[in-house]
Amino acid sequence: MPFCDGVKLQEAYRRAQAERFAFMANNIAEPSILIGLLEAYAEARSDLLVQISPGAAKYAGGGDKRAGLRALSALVRELAEPYPIRVFINLDHFTADEMGLIEEAIDVRLVSSVMIDASREAFEENVRISRTVAEKAKGTGILIEAELGKIRGVEDEVASDEALYTDPDEAAEFVKRTGADLLAISVGTQHGVSKGRDLELRADLATKIRDRLVRAGIDAPLVLHGTSGLLPEQVREMIGYGICKLNKDTHYQYVFGRTACEFFAAHAEGIIPPAGVEDDVVNLFAKGDWSPDKKVFDPRVVGREIQAKVREIALVLIDQAGSGGKTLWVQKEGRR
Ligand code: G3H
Image 1 (cartoon, protein in one colour):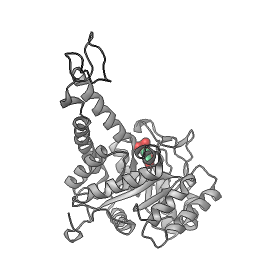
Image 2: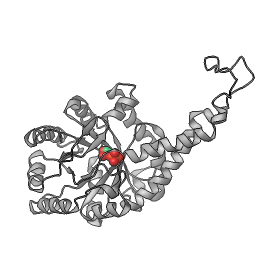
Image 3: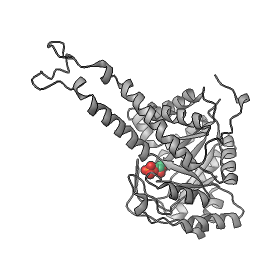
């Protein structure tokens, strides 16, 4: 039962708020990154939050978002079973265009939480859309994250050329009126490949937002999107200002691409025929003397390299977030 619902996720956030640590929220679209994450989080004794974006669902479903979402959710739940940690699934950046899928995911409890991203809309429309999802989730044990402000860059199917910092004066009203459990804020991070040292991070805004929420009697955890490329000291600073969830997608995509690139570059001679040999993929080189080397082209071989590298990087990121050793999993929750 390592896959847990939003009630248990809420418990994890409460502890993170009380003890000033955070969870990296890690996007997945295929098994290798997920397996590397599970290995790292179990080793570090940290609960694990994985995220599925609409683009990841579409990719995993061969173009069918619904099939991909169900497949990825099942993959996480099945692979998580033997690990002695709690594992949560968040729908990431789902928009009003995916309302049918969001409703289905809530109805059949595919996930622990849902991020409804209506941040590109004006305030009132953002409130209306986010509240619709929060009302749908009421009583189901699934948490809802909503976003106020805009984050620059491209994340999957959501893009913005401008950064619109979250207005602290609107934050409490937004959370109250939407009924969201978590608030994603924009304080200068950027989606995609970004350099922490060049970002105009407004840590003061995070503090103001936190203060306004507390004064209004709201204890919704704060979420930071676009955290790939933040420096460790920036991560720690943000956690100090009350951020409980830090979203990372680009960083793991790079780890995947880089590891595969290095592996294939080092083993190209076992995959690409040498000059003078007919390039005969159609017949798998059956007519000539040269043969490719299965020990290097089998996708599972590079896949294992990727899993190991993701595990290594995830351990560093868990350390930055401070979630190591904080799992809420207890033996009686069972293992297969
Ligand atoms: O929700 C996903 C994240 O905000 C992705 O941010 O591009 O910095 O990894 P990233």
